[in-house]
Image 1 (spheres, rainbow, N blue to C red):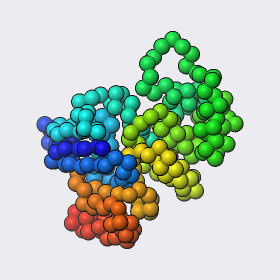
Image 2: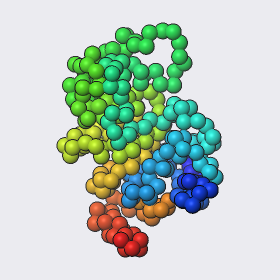
Image 3: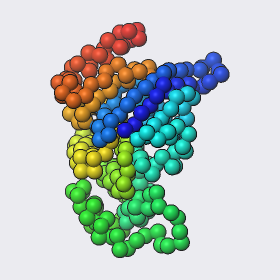
Image 4: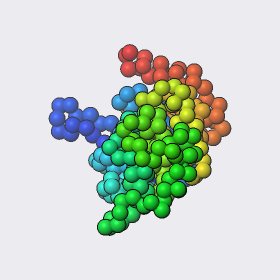
Length: 257
């Protein structure tokens, strides 16, 4: 379970451009829940992910992961139990390393550093089997550098690498936004498959309203650091894209747009 308690976050503190994004923001995400998060630019979606992952600090409040206070735990330590896939397919893989080297590196996440070889050849067959599940033919390209792969292939690899080691939470930061429609569909199907098989608690930020409606068992709509829509279970199943668009329009009118 993930808990954000009375979170406050300011940007440009002490300047004329000071902005309060979160003020007393609280959110609880249950074990194994798949939450889709939508909202306009600047609504707090990505900032919320960064606070959870430790990429930026909170100014006030607490973040608890399965009852353990991680508020002041550095980002690199949180990554032992959190997998994150970014919008840019190039971020999740090392372009100048081969697929085998990338997989080996991901396989070492959270493990102690030592003087053993970085590539475990005995795990090669395991990597090949895992890549085969993607259905993209990457299992036959272990010695190909990741930098020559397509965006979709790299994002699929990044998704696999983020979930190779045992993690509790999966963070998806608009992970299909940079892909063409067909490839994005493939990545979403892979996402759903991996989340279900590994029973991961998942937070997915997306601008694709159809994905937000079709995937996951809870939907959040953020606006000015607050959740203006929060539906789960049967209530979430009944929501339509038109319902979300209506809320977007209401907010737009309120903001004078």
